[in-house]
Length: 90
Image (cartoon, rainbow, N blue to C red; front, side, top):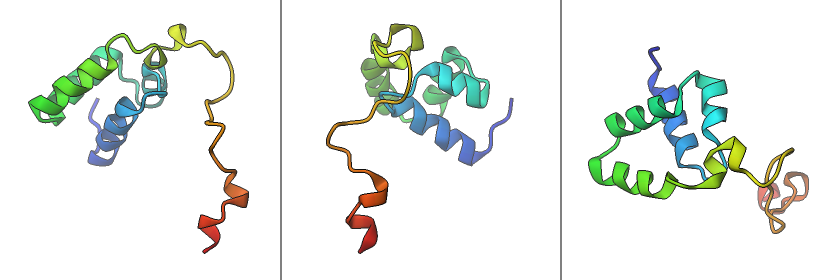
């Protein structure tokens, strides 16, 4: 499967996000975890790839079955509602 530059950037972004599971990348881009690892290895500097792999290995939030919450999305208790965000109204 050929991905555009924009899609590659989005996959990399999703792979770096702690709370985005590999299953979400599979659903959106039809890439397995191995495909994502190969893409990251190919698109990143070796030192950045090693840092990412160290960060991702064993992280429960990157795998749907290991998550402690079942439904919904994680939201920090300190996160403001977008509708009442004073910064966006400046």
